[in-house]
Amino acid sequence: MSVLLKVIKEGNTTLVNVCEKELLGKVFVERGIVLHVNEEFYGGEEVSEDEAFALFDSASVVSLIGNRIVDEAISRGFVLRDSTIKVAGVTFAQIYNV
Image (cartoon, rainbow, N blue to C red):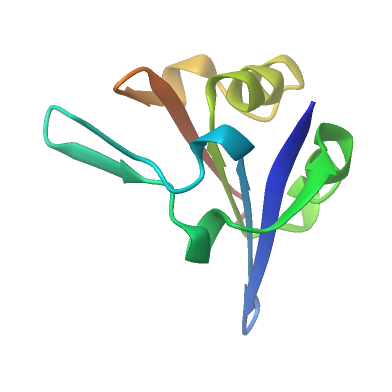
């Protein structure tokens, strides 16, 4: 499966943002939580999952949106299922490497 990857570097911080391409541009709202999958933060190049996962260890923060990509991050040991949230049926997770 391919995903959208956007890498943002600010000083010593590297953000790796990954989302499933069909979610880009959508807004999900539930229980007062708003998950906005905007172009500025998530719009990037289309890459394979493996290419995206290869950047996780060097990132300061990884942001993942999408049921399939979060499930894959869980199966690869990057994310614990209990540390994800689901907003209007869409799973979101973050990884902090500090």
